[in-house]
Structures are given as C-alpha cells and as structure tokens.
Image (cartoon, rainbow, N blue to C red; front, side, top):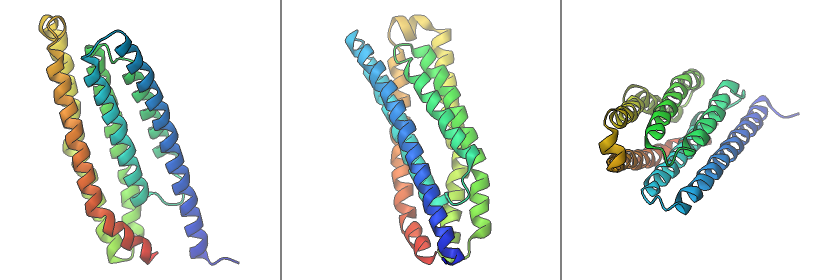
Length: 223
C-alpha cells in the first residue's frame, strides 16, 4: 500500500496534468480563432490589422505563460473547478475578441471586458494562494508563496486595473472622436500603446518566473 504522502503526490501530479492539458487546449482554440480572423483581415489588405493580430498573439502568450506559472506554483489536489471555469470563460472572451480585429471600437470595448474577467480570476485565485500558505511547512514554500502573493496583489491592485483603464479610455476616445481615430486611422496609436503594454507585461512575467524558478525547484524537492 502506498503511503499517504505518495498518494497525495500522485493526485497532485494528476491535477497538474489536467490543468496543463486544459490550458493547452483552450489556448489552441483561441489561436485558431485568431488565425482564422487574421487570414480574413489580411485578405482584405487591412495592413493596420497586423497590429491587432500581434496584440492578439500577445494575449495568448500572456495567458499561457501566466497559466503555466500558476500551475507550477499553486495547483495541487483537490481539483479547483471554479478556477478552471474561469479559464474556459477567458478562452471564450479571447475568441470573441479576436473576431473584432477589423473593428477598433469593438476591439477596445471587448479588451476592457476581457481584462475585467482576468481581474476577477486574479481575485478568485487569491484563495488558492491562501490555501497554499496555510499548508506550507518548509522555508522554500513560504518564500515561494510569499512571492506569488505579492505578484497576485500587484496584478489585482495595479496592473490589471491599468489595463482596464487603458482599454476603456481608448474605446471612449474612438467613440468620442471617430473622425480622427477611425477616418484618419488614429486608432493605430492606440493599438500600438496596447501592444507595447502587452510586450512590457510579457517581459515582467519572464522576469518574475526567473525569480521564482529556484524557489519552485526547492519547494518540489522538500515535498
């Protein structure tokens, strides 16, 4: 008979595999919608749409990388249904968002809504962090979950709200001054700002993972 710790490790591994499989599937679906709509935009020679395609690709990169980091640091048995339902809702949001590559106003409106869902996901996942902190024993685990909590709070209090505000203001600007932002293609400035913010966030995510990678390894070795 397997000892309790061994059984728990097997269950943890199963849940992690489920999580990674789900993330891969839903982001594959999102990539399909992005590719399909990008092909339509390019066939009509809307070259400014390339910026929207690049922004959409960054959305997929961000969601996938954050999900993998989250899985490696926080996901354990039991399976968290609410968390996974949020993932599926985000994938739906991405699919709808990517259908508006040729509509700047709708793009920024939907981007704000999508960012709002992501913010709710960050808030919801705080309960997972609190659970991991409560059950942690080793110093490496305490350090890892402290970093995860700090990152989560930064996203909740600053980064996600800033992204929501950026998209809302961009949508408001297009709605208020369509002659400049639509007729004269001023929306290119707005999507460029959004794209740069996504690239900056990807850089932040990469730095964050580099910082916690040794802690993840040490916490696994203590289990």
